[in-house]
Image (cartoon, rainbow, N blue to C red; front, side):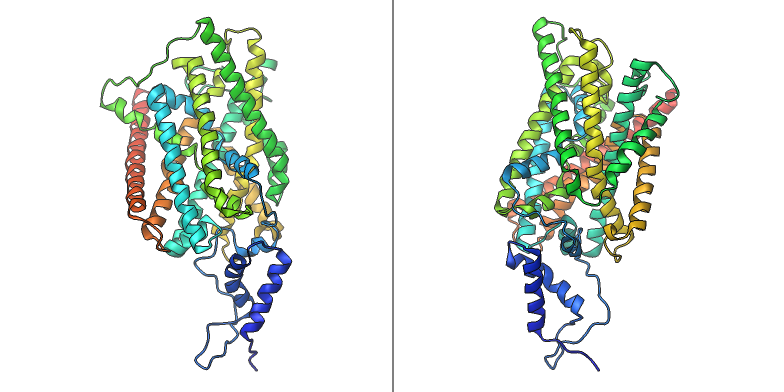
Length: 498
């Protein structure tokens, strides 16, 4: 005998769930839970006789969010009413990562004036792309980037976004490991060996080689931190990581200013040196590095969902981008001023020589240790999003990964192994940034938001919005295509020379 349920029953269940979860926005919560409640209770679409019948199994809609609604039921979004300053802090932490280490090399390639202008332009384009996502999400009451892509382009749109986040975050974490290896064990990626901290203190031994040091870091630092199933468990390590990044910026600026007043720094080039078509193509390789430095889009919805007043998200984004751009400009300018044409792809590797000031070796070690520790503490935050999105790609119909210990352990161990091996065999963070920046990062940051506006699923895009969206796509595709071509030519040229 078939069981029939009235619509009033569904409404009562929704109200009960809302009261238990304590969501501040009843209308938003009802819209998010309506379809899930009907699926759980087995209510199908209304039949001709006005009744609603039981559905034998739950179907997964192609618009299922990147973070499924069931995640909210497990308490991942239980912290409501986040403050303005807290949201700015969280978004700024997402933005400022390892990208800051590669920006001085971009300034060296582009020159100070074009380099600083590019940092500002990319920041403005990032603000515009985030605004596109936020406006569409608020209009459609969407709570995740993946869900929005699913609304605009169906299941394959959502999958494309999740795959891009996976690729981008893997690339970023490989960069983190490369930086740690450079700082602790040294690097010879430019043909000249730069000593690491452990080598400088104890000499070169097998136990402080790159492979052993990274293995120890993975087992004794990363493995415990990525074992947490709640992102909130990392709030204290996140705060400490920001403080360590500030130490690096302040010391670098202070040393550069002292040497500038002492007249011991060379005049930096204001514009790039062009000696042929190949040098022009080479300039485009800096674009993916700049793009990667601003990718934070996959965390915007999480921050937005926690705000008591969701209209604050736009000023929060602007404030965060202003702060991060200021840090980027200061670090890039002073690091290039300090090291000139000797600036390496990973500027931390420059801090292994005499800086020309008293207690130079002490400042060298403080800068490198502080930023290496910063990277170690940021790693698990990026890893958390990577694991969640990879699990969504591989097991879209399974229960949440936090409730399956076996799947949680297998995915975690597999990702750590892949990242560790890649960090051993990729010699330079410039190579990793160019790959992720020219592929996944540009999709997440510019192409996907522009595609959403062009599809305009909620009818809110103006003519100016669509013109800007087309412009962003054209610039992103052209600049990154040229960057990939230039990278390929450089690789072939190095092989011929070898």
